[in-house]
Length: 310
Image (cartoon, rainbow, N blue to C red; front, side, top):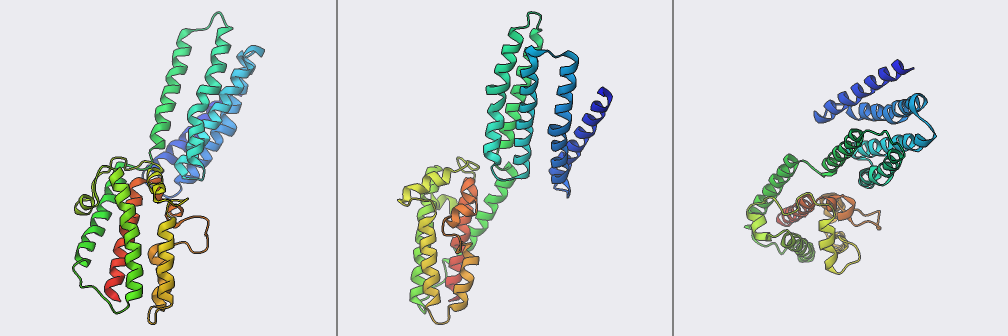
């Protein structure tokens, strides 16, 4: 039985290791390997190993410790899988997985060893070391995006801002004043959003447009949401949605702009069907500070391009 458990453990670790290599290199099949490997780890290897150890060395006094050990492994590795796979509620699960060992496993471990007069202090040190390693690894997983992705994002914004500088040199177009006015209204809201966010990030819109650079909290979660709530609307992004929908309605009622009205939701990445979630929130850009600003830069550039074609 013990030999079979060892073999299962080696196979499980190899699958997870290969899945990790595939994931790092963005090769196909990485998700399946990680899912199968971690599922085998928490549902097969860990329970079998814990049961085998309990039968060999366990007693009623440390039964609870064996159960807590399996539960902790299940919660920690499952939360890591959700985070790596970008599945829903990954952030919540990872938070639970981070604190679970300290509020469940560690108290049970301390109570159990306190009843054992012959316990080895080195076992305690080893367990604390593993908990520290788990905390560090979970914190690394909690990082939203890599530094390379952030720098790529800054390059996108630099491109948007370069295009905008060229578009700003075009003369004003008054052939369709209603639509132009609504475009300007959306641009005003976008500018207001950017000013609020960038000011909170210790920079200015002018500095950002001249050279999009690293923000104070580039990958901070929900930082942009907190800032945009100061616009006076119940949900961040509502004001932008309202102005975009007013632009679409104006385009629908303007002769010659019917096709533009049909294309605007896609151009602006605007949600029409789901009225409960503002577009800015739906696109998940509010989870990453940098991507929020880039989304706004994209909207701004697209609208100025439209103005030049009317």
